[in-house]
Amino acid sequence: MKEQLERAEAGVAKLLEGRSDRWYPLFHIAAKAGWINDPNGLSYFNGRYQVYFQHHPFGTQWGPMHWGHVSSEDMVTWRREPIAMAPSIEADRDGVFSGSAVVSDDNQLVAYYTGHRWRNGVNEDEGNLQVQCMAVSDDGITFEKTGVIVECPEGLLHFRDPKVWRMGDTWYMVFGACSAENRGQVWLYTSTDMKSWEFDRVIFTDPNPRVFMLECPDMFPLDDKWVITYCPMGTKPERYVARNGHNAGYVVGDWQPGGVFEQITDYRTIDWGHQFYAPQSFEAPDGRRIEYGWLGSFTMPIATQEVDGWCGQFTVPRELTLDKNNHLRSFPIAEIEQLRTETIDFGAFELGLNGDKVLVDDDGGAVEIELEVDLASTSAERIGLRVHNTPDGGHTYVAYDDLAGRVDLDRRLTGNGDRGHRAAPYEGGSQLRLRVLVDRGSVEVFVNDGAESITSYSFPNKGPRAVVLCAESGVTKVNGLKVHRLRTIWESPDR
Ligand code: FRU
Image 1: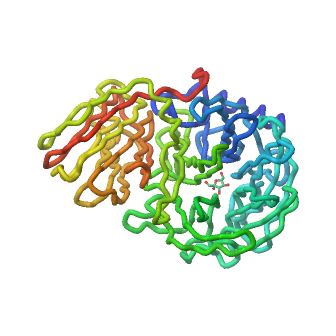
Image 2: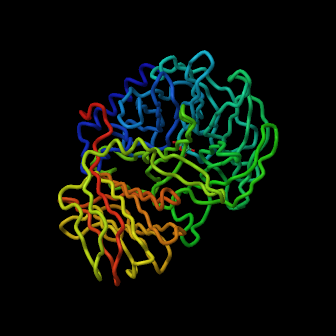
Image 3: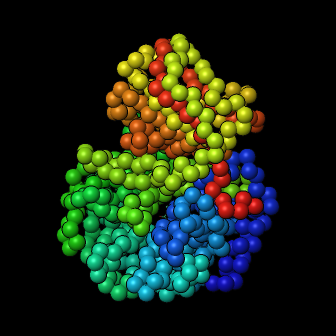
């Protein structure tokens, strides 16, 4: 693989020369240059958090997939690592697709991924050959491919994205599949030696008959329940739900090894924004369930693709919990607060009728806003934050909308890229809490400590990027408001 990896590094280096940083993230993981999609191989190994990613090193579009790599001691400061895997064997000829990584008893990092081939060698017209492959590493940096460990069962059109975990002496692996009847499914296999795998059962079939494939399934315990997250292909938009070309959701149920998955909730959206796909989770050494999503999409064109030299990033790491209604909550891990370099505390105040308050007027390229509003003493119909607010009036509007009972992220006036709005339901009662993370090219909104989230690209126009609090038609009782400036996550920000 050495030669392929050298070529890939050269590809990134070439793109990096021309990279524009106007929207390049400061505190979200992204490739130095080139395209990225799904998070892969999330793990804690060799005293560091390991994050791999689907990576096309030769362009800003999706292309032959590699595994890029970054690592960190604390999930706050990150180091760029060499590209970990490139297509190099017949089984992964057309791509080293998504997968996961676990630590073996003899302290190796074992990666499972999908080896992807187009039957005709150029596109999907005559179908795919997708097999699950294994690769092993002593240091998390250099991998040796073992080859195919699970062949694609006869009749399946898609069969990919292995996610592995361990319980006792048994290893479990789920994949996404498109059944012979064209239904989206999750298949479960087991192993005791990590190499030979046996079919256990189809653990989940999406009840929606339109759905033909479940990409990137993940299955993990939270409290005494099991959660399956997955990305259903074939859904159609319904009001606020499934608005994106590619969407991610979850179901909660009961499961025991060797048994069926008994689903107890309906399918629900994980994140309501334009850009949230292919999430993967892992268990941190302290037991927290942490998830990264791909903060990107296959909805083209994307504003960074043309001249900026990069495309795609990850969400901040989010801790997942279940509330008493089996509702999945996701909130930035506590460590993210270590990125704060300066805090401006506006305290409590009242904002008058149609009030506007400028919170940051310089280049607030990477900021975090914490806003608490007493809705019981508020008559404003919408209370919002204009972020990426440039002198020409361009901005992205994040607002609580009291008429709709939702929190909205509106890109109607966003400087560049796709427009439209997305909105999460608000069921939080009279104390509204919004936490908004604004990077140079994205916005992540967390409602009431992670009850809902909304994640979208936001590519501002030229000029300083202000943050403005505003209220429409009524007064607003702000209980607390802080703006934090955030630093970069990179150990050596030398690109
Ligand atoms: C999801 C996905 C996966 C696949 C990978 C290829 O975004 O399509 O199903 O493994 O991306 O890059």
